[in-house]
Length: 341
Image 1 (cartoon, one colour):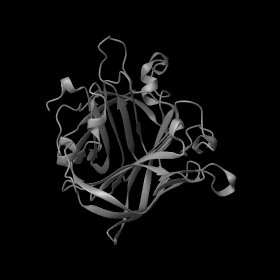
Image 2 (image 1 turned 90 degrees about the vertical axis):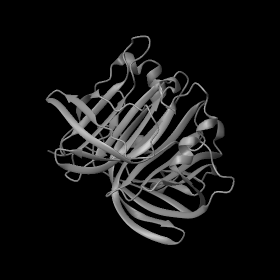
Image 3 (image 1 turned 180 degrees about the vertical axis):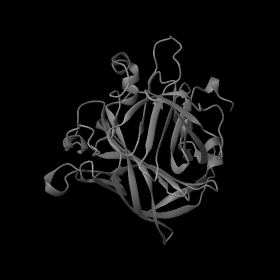
Image 4 (image 1 turned 135 degrees about the vertical axis):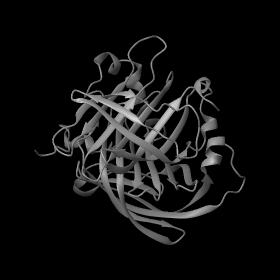
């Protein structure tokens, strides 16, 4: 059975906006990447907001199991979105550039040489930083090849009630797709070739955060081609249904809808080596996926978020499923009064 890597989406969904969109609309590409053996992991993102169209937000985290996190948050000058063939295929900000080489088949992410702050997972968790942290000169070139059909938020097992309410505004119109990755990472002139897995997220539309109360988001792509993904929100105080949308992929065909029945909710901030087991339920039964993080960190600048916003932790994990192992991502958030700070 063939794999439809478009998931039924038109190729135009892979393009970025050619010009400034309407009020409150954003154009965003994000990638979570893990070296295949867990030597390091990365988060790369460009967020283009209509109200700040001339300079897009960019972020980069390169995290290592020993606790080092090379981290950048800036607003960077943008470049023309027009790529080969005259199509809007490029989203950039300062040194970061994403390009759709061929829709749903090949993307690239590059970072021209640029000084980036080196911090630690402990500093990010405490949200307390040295006055003059070390700087590392960073560059990379990464190729991304989609390997799994995209998860289009709201199209698997999520109810229309959920996707027409506030939870849809937290997600914004989006899809995510697991990819194989290969590239070269350069730190202070030392170049390292690598292979790995990546999750590519593409969002276009309005996104709101007011009232958000937490989530758990996990995914991984295994050597055999098997994969899983899930995004689940905690139970709501008002008793209404919460988002709980996931899938498993057997390596061929389409995504199989799944729901999380055991979730590793965020309760305490660790720097790594935290067990994050997940149990998914499908029409064929339950699937248990064991996981252990190899680096955990919070986003730089957590202190600037509203006091009511949940505590957020990004991480990368070693996952185990039916005798196979792979590296993958996990992001979680929890309201502060439910945390062990």
